[in-house]
Length: 269
Ligand SMILES: Nc1nc2c(ncn2[C@@H]2O[C@H](COP(=O)(O)OP(=O)(O)OP(=O)(O)O)[C@@H](O)[C@H]2O)c(=O)[nH]1
Ligand SMILES: [Mg+2]
Image 1 (cartoon, rainbow, N blue to C red):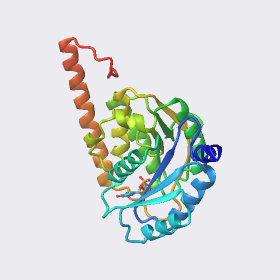
Image 2: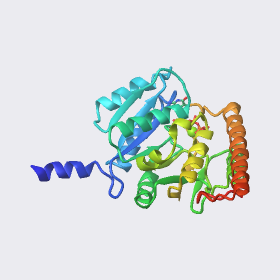
Image 3: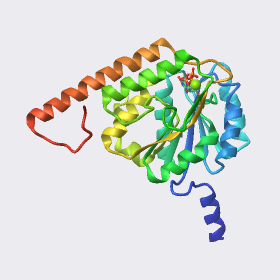
């Protein structure tokens, strides 16, 4: 009997990582959600999935409920209305922590983040606190993205790297694994970003907390169905927040230099 329970417990754990919750935020992803959940289940049978839906008008929430009814590995967090990607993830992280998960995964619903890459990300998480699925590291591929999006992503990442002094090639990317212990080391209550800058903000906080960050190349593909929620407002938010963080970090570094205190934290350029 003990043996059988033990076997069940281990079947729901990722070796070297523990119990993993994949959080998939959704807003109007009715055409995508069943496909992505099926792909995750096939690619990584041990993980649990939480769909965090912001009361999508297109009925994504009801489809998610039906998926959850048919599969004990799928659950749904219904939120009141569209509050942004960052808020949905923070709610998912809290949900995972309350239920004793050891790691959470961030993954878009639109198929841009291939579930087939998840085993490689989880493998890297054995020796890391944060794993970033990167589009801009050797071995990565970006499929069907228009030049405009390529330039925006490359430019945004270059700016983030220079402004924040982070050795991360894809600070805006949203395909990640966080150990809960790493999230505990970050002051999540201080997070204010909503759009893309949420990923940059968490990269920055993780880097400053000194946790082990590893990047793994992924194959990123343009969404095939449904509409992007990317907007000029989201890009503008990322730009001004990165600038503000960069200025703040430099001021702090100067102040530390003036007072001759070394914190052992990251060194800013
Ligand atoms: N719960 C929730 N999910 C959201 C919200 N905004 C976006 N999402 C989801 O977050 C994921 C990423 O959104 P996308 O629209 O694909 O944004 P993107 O990947 O930056 O843009 P594209 O590359 O153009 O697809 C998708 O699964 C969306 O459904 C939101 O306000 N609330
Ligand atoms: Mg997308």
